[in-house]
Length: 312
Image (cartoon, rainbow, N blue to C red; front, side, top):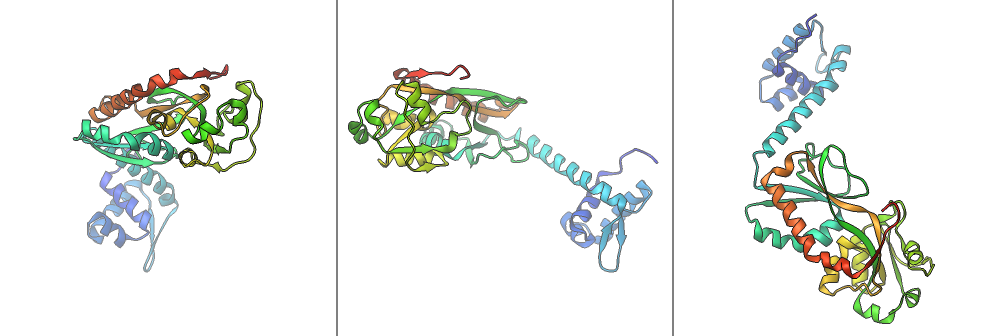
């Protein structure tokens, strides 16, 4: 028995027939006649030396050999399709697909996109607001922005600005709670989206770090950081605001951070893409624009005493 692989067209015919369990439907998918598809599968069976399908009256089913081949054939064509899409994207300099979490998309990207569009009208931006783990090739993603404590090996990774949290609220609410001691009586908002961090970053940690131990227990809890920030903007209460997500509201005066003390999260937002893809014109342009936008508000961090744990 030869180890030489059979023709790709025959394998493609088998893959389609195995997925549909129908020669007629497979022929329709491949835009060939049922006779032509049947001929390709017959030639594949002759190459292998055994049947891949049992031909029944009005149906087909896989033989043991067919069952062994089908998963690898499907995976092989999926891999080829991903590779082909990746190769096509290297020729596309006008489309950029970015994935970021819903909070970062809403609070950092969306308010600034007009600036990028003005600077780069030739680039069509597409966004996927998602926290799930993305595959650059499978999901046709060019850039991912992710919040994490560690780098992602095997990719081009650019850590963005240091992340910290500090109590933020509307100016009106701040006038009612001018000191850290008075803050203990404020209505609290809880952002549960960073509960995964270790060491933890929460209200009781912040109060411990500023030297006035206190553990707020009551208040609305949000699984998405942007929802917690929106509640603070509405005057519902005080939230521990994450730098990237509140910095524009602080710069524009919609929120204030009156106590001047922040604690480092130990994690950062990171700019990720496939290794080598960072040189593509639209990806490089987006990266450089993000860095320039971050630089516009970097001075605001100087207004805070940032407390860092030993692991930050």
